[in-house]
Length: 204
Image 1 (cartoon, rainbow, N blue to C red):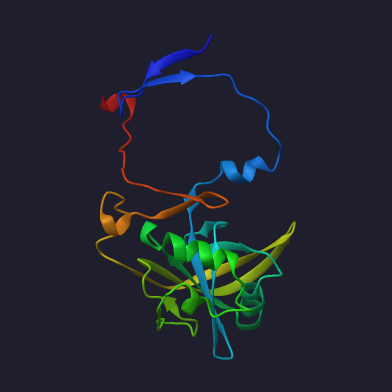
Image 2: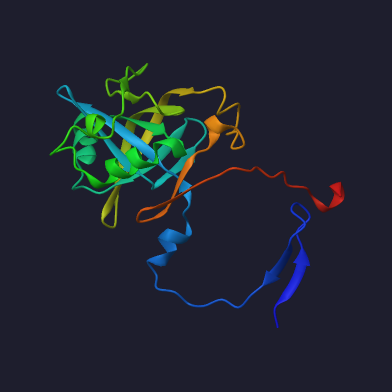
């Protein structure tokens, strides 16, 4: 029989239900929803923007992040040639643009124009930033590791810029500007709208 206890933060009853076995590839979807980003690059005056969901922090000092990109992508080619890229953080207002940038190829279309996005100059790299996004990480590639059918680009963060209404040491998901976009899979997305504060048993 399932057991139950009450969540101290929300007051809801938590039930321990039976679990079922799933196919292995479901593991990737279970790690979603993670914040989605628009990766921007530039090669020979050709800007490009790609939707990415497979990203992770790697190190504090130096500040390193990882972005997994399939070798067939134009973004992969541009990063390999220039060693630079930017991670742009969108909000739920940009859902349609984000989805389009994940479906079209920069080899065929100017995705900035197709998605009605505006480019702005970065502080440290040649690649443009997406002006409508609320946060930007400008990166230089330190390493590339082939893992399965993706390459993991390890980027050192050279510059960070954020919207103060969205981010002040952490994302303010209750603010309109801080409603980050998360990918559930396929054409399904979600936004975070409420933050919780954890307590330890001794604090109760």
